[in-house]
Amino acid sequence: MSRNQRFGWRWIKKMVLRGLIGITAFWLAGIVCFAFVPVPFSAVMIERQLGAWLQGNFHYMAHSDWVGRDEISPWMALAVIASEDQKFPDHWGFDVDAIQSVLDNNDENAHLRGASTLSQQTAKNVFLWDGRSWVRKGLEAGLTVGIETVWSKRRILTVYLNVAEFGEGVFGAEEAAQRYFHKPASRLTMSEAALLAAVLPNPIRFKVTAPSRYIYQRQQWIMRQMRQLGGEAFLVRNHLN
Image 1: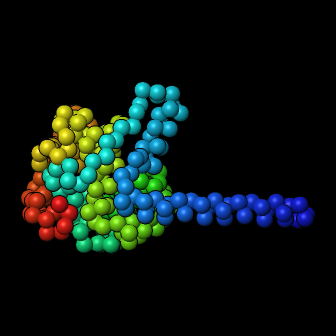
Image 2 (image 1 turned 90 degrees about the horizontal axis):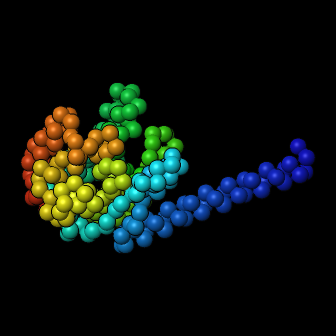
Image 3 (image 1 turned 60 degrees about the vertical axis):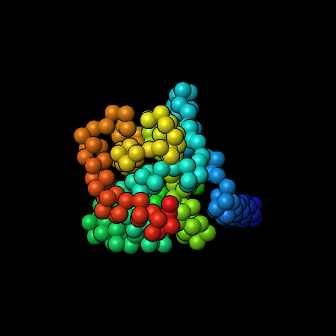
């Protein structure tokens, strides 16, 4: 290898290292900042918007309207916990039992979705891209440790409820409540919250405005789980209200 080639490789390595350090610093700053201030937009929102423009869809607009935890119905908070992560108050970002279960089943789809906690989904939504890959899951794990260390559980839940995708261009509980039920998120009923939570596994495929039989069944299951958790008392007991 010539001297110029060695110099070129060293320069490339130096630039890559600087880039990685810069991205890491950006993520760390974001974790600290978003512990206190509203998240103006998420990485997934940016991904969706850019993806639409690249496909020539200039009608698509990613909408989100940040509201505080007190401005979101307790039923909405309980619905996402009941449907997505019932161990949320107790774990440190990862559901070890769920991870072990999907590893034992050797099911990639279940592994990449079924074992994701609300903390992991929040980390992914805010800082990373959508999709299924081990690289993204590795980055997601590191960011999850960061937000679990710096944010309270109540803060994680608040951010999740404001950035979760509920439909095409619809992000956050407030935007979803206004779009689908013409009311603020603070007035969502138990059944409305359960319906919104029912589409979370795939909000592009499943429609709040045209729920399939599966979504209706999932809505009923979520409502049963909400009752079994203890209703609003569950949120109060775990300081999530």
